[in-house]
Image 1 (tube, rainbow over the protein chains, first blue to last red):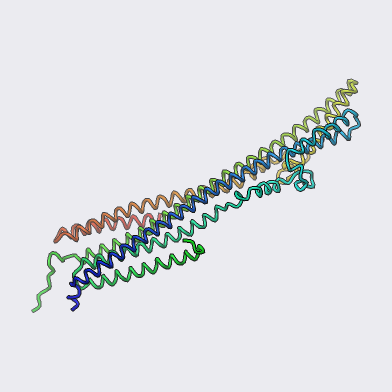
Image 2: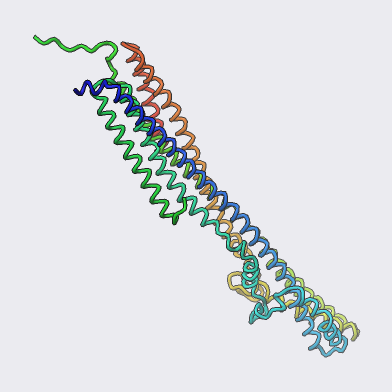
Amino acid sequence: MLKRLNESPRLDIFIAIIIAVVSATTAFAAWRASMVSSAAGDAIRQGLIDAVKKQAGSSEDWRRTYEEAGHAQTYAVALAQVEAFEKSSDKAAQSQGRNMRQYLLPSLQLVTELTTDDKYLKEDGTYDLELRFADLEAATPDLTALDPTASFKLSDQYSSEQRWLTVGVILLAISLFWLALSQLSMKRSRLVTLAIGVGIYLFGLAWFGLVELIFFSVRGGAL
Amino acid sequence: MNEPQVLEPTERYKILIVVLTLITTIITAVVATLQADANIRANSANRDSQYFAILASAELHRSGLQSTYDLNTFAKVLLERQTELMMQFTALEMEQSGDKFGTALSKISALVAKARADKLTSFSVFYTDPRYASKTTDGTPDGEAYLRDSSKLANEIVEKQNTAADDYHKWSSKADSYVGVLTVMAVAFFLFGLAQALTGRMRLVFAIFGMVILLISSAWTVLILVV
């Protein structure tokens, strides 16, 4: 009876149908693994673009901070000079100090917010450059909000998923091999190889589904 | 009396070849997984090396701006101190030569230079920061410590970048080597396929060729994995 079943054309058709289903599943799994790999690449690309934009913005803010620091320093030194003139007993110096305070200092003061806004003035008479930089950064929230590490974290998740999906694809490919072996064989082992092939296929399918489910929930519902 | 069962020439070694093909399939699956893993690791390391390069570049730009500011301030302090000293000498000379106007002018200039220098000193890390300020009155600031500190962060980032770049080369090279192994595995598959199609001694010959190829590729895989 077993011999009859082994050589039955119906079994041939059954195995052929299973091979077709497994082939389609393997192709789908390979496509999905490729999609996940592509998503990882996209996240890396986005992260690098964000990093360049964020650092360019930050560099510009530092440049402005130090440029303004130079102007503020010029103002502070001019003010010290004016005070020295004013304290002098020389009338020409006092006059020079008075005129500098009236005409020169207001112009120098207007160049930068470091000298117009008291919040930047420190107790020692210098200026709080870190605070000025923080304010300049806050003025460009779209650039400051960029977080390359978030994109890299996402790419790591996709890469990790790709790693496990590849294992699933390989399991499916192995099941295909056993099923092909079962199709070619006409002996008693045909049913055994068929059972192994179907078993590996089901295991691979479950593996694939589980990996997808885990990473789907880790990403908060994003494919 | 039972005679020993003799297999037909078409069936001889067939099971052996099936087993060998199965082993090759499993090894190929393992190598394919290792290749995918190496490729993923190479991509991550490549990403990190590029990210750290961007960070290093930005940090170098920032520290360059800071150094320019700090050194300019320091140079201005020196200039004003020298001017103050020079104008004091001049005032002394004018006083000795009886030039009152010249003396007063020089004294005012020295006074202004001192005021400017004092103010600039408060802006200079070389005088205000205890890490760089001179420990003695006539000493010079610790320029070496300043340079070391100003490039410290950039150097740390560059070090991370180098490590990531090295990792990228390592994993990329491994991934490439695994592709080589997979190619050789394909040859083993081909030889076992041929062996399955042939009969008699030729089947065994091709099976042996396939086994040799399989052993070489397995050894190569282990070598890649270990090194």
